Image (tube, rainbow, N blue to C red; front, top):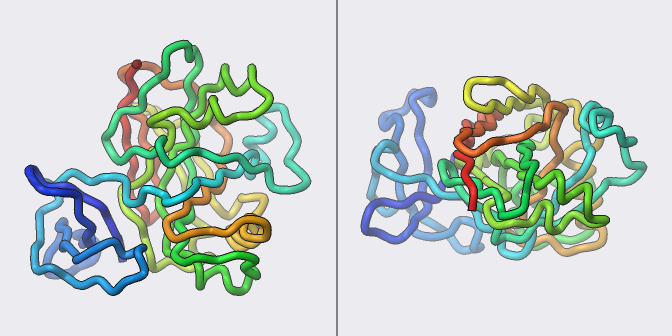
Length: 267
């Protein structure tokens, strides 16, 4: 199932279920509206309204309620290109929920940033309140998976001992285009990732190459902090990170999860 947040002109944002042509169903390339937030812990139902995807604007499929936990250097090839070792324990940092934007919304280079980078990633979306989750129970607490771009002011990252300013600016966490809820952690652990700037392919990786896979990451993060429904864990980026210029369109594609595209502009 693909869960999306969307907007129709003149109406408040809503949640819906996406049906694509590849599904072979009766309503290809549409979104069927549902009654509420599927992450709120209450039952949802179809409203009866259905819209062509061409007539709606897809939004970030989730605004994390409390936190975005991101994992640094979780692909060995990315660690190598940064001239840094693979950490002995997961390297964590936080991004505020105010940096989340959706598909086609602009990534805004903040004033003073000279070196703005893309980082295409798989994101885990948590589905229930949980702490100290053993690896064999991770599937029970994961709502689904979406695409993320961990936008980074690389010059600021090099200047500061901690990464909040470099990673936490407004618009620095595009998410979307929807949440895929039917993948198991094992299936999500073997997805191809590709990042393009315009038509130029910049990153090609696969989640099978994660240093620490999905179960280990959820278990580790939940060992010391409570995870809430809608929290996101960004699993790390493969090699090939690089700069974005004003006017570029950056697209991150993950098998089965669609394409997340965003233009780049300046403040």
